[in-house]
Image 1 (tube, rainbow, N blue to C red):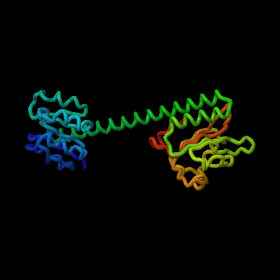
Image 2 (cartoon, helix red, strand yellow):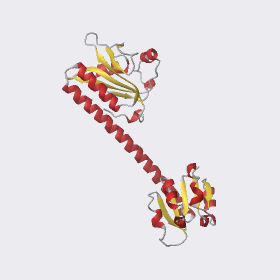
Image 3 (cartoon, rainbow, N blue to C red):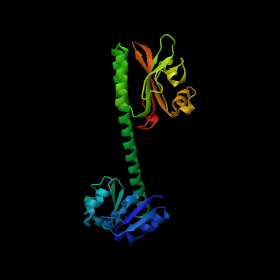
Image 4 (cartoon, rainbow, N blue to C red):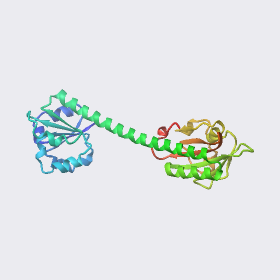
Amino acid sequence: MPNVFLIGPGLHKRDIEDILSQNRFEVSRFASIENALSHLNRKADVLIIEKEQYRNKAFKKFLKASAGTPKLIVSFDYSFRGFAAWLKDSLACPCYSPSEKELLYFINRILKEKNTREENKTLRQELDTARKEINFFEDVGKTLTSSLKLNEILAAVMRKTKEMTAAEAWSVLLVDETTGDIIFEKANTKKVEKYRLKPGEGIAGWVAQEGIPVIVPDVSLDKRFSPKMDKRTHFKTRSLMCVPIKSQGRVIGVLEVVNKTTGEPKTWTSL
């Protein structure tokens, strides 16, 4: 049930509160913006405010405290005077003596606008994360293709992993050219270093064998996942990203990032 603050004595004399209550809005009444200030922490969904409240001495403080909350500014005369002060807030919408239909229309419109802005903000954050991840893999790729020394490759991979990755665990596995096993060469825990997986074993083994990067949002739903390492380390793998490390056109290892802590696994780039 959306929570609406009804602010201003002129609004209380109309049937606005009855209209809102009949349409399943929870209504809180305040005589002025000064009275409403201390209640803004109650997370009002919409503020319906009498235009003349711009004259209140607490006006600037109220605008600052209510930034980001949709506002319907109601005037009972057809004068533009007083609207300009309110419209500095991008989520403020003016209206003149609204009918029931107009009132509900304007409330729904500014709520949708707020939701759209929040969705756009989330998308921008996800895009920024994706760009960072793309740059990370491009940088690692450039380093790998330009380096012939294993130590240089590992140092570069681990440095860039630390720079970019916010995850619970990560590891670099290298292919044993004699047996085809993949060996945990570097990791953020000593418990797994030098441990071996058979060719094709687990998701890391599959990536090393196929040379294809994978993103698994839920490992419990992927039949390639092997719980062997979790049992060994008493760790719980929920999601992972696994990327083949290539040098001179062949797979020499795998970079594995487990349980990413920034963003949802579904936002990890498709590499």
